[in-house]
Image (cartoon, rainbow, N blue to C red; front, side, top):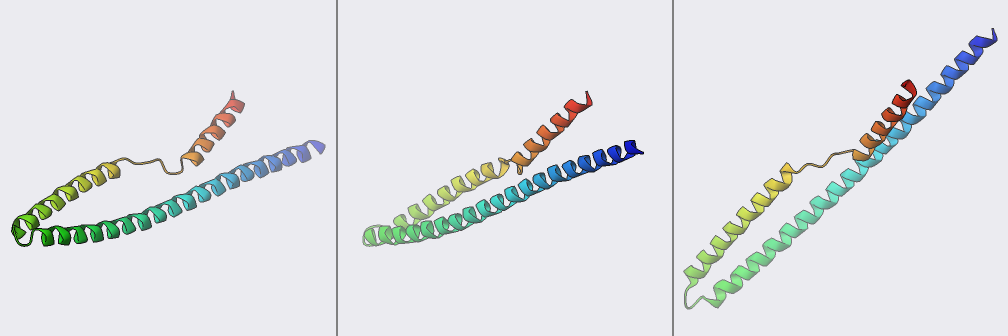
Length: 126
């Protein structure tokens, strides 16, 4: 039966093509996952370094200001610095809260490719 060999060969090619598409999409998904992980790691390290250096600068600047006003008004200098640090931490907390509510779509390239594939396969159904 020559017709069945052609049908099975066609099904085999279809399965091979489908597996190739799936493999490509999974590789793209894995690449995006790795890029996002590396980006988040870099952001965390830079954020920790920035916090460390800002804290060091704030401590040294506070010591400088208190030493400068030590003979005249040391308590006023300490209270003004404490209040300014409290206000700045409030602004930072509000900014962080706003950033946490802004979410990016993870795997956007993979999702776009899958949408394109679905659209292309839908064109064959018509």
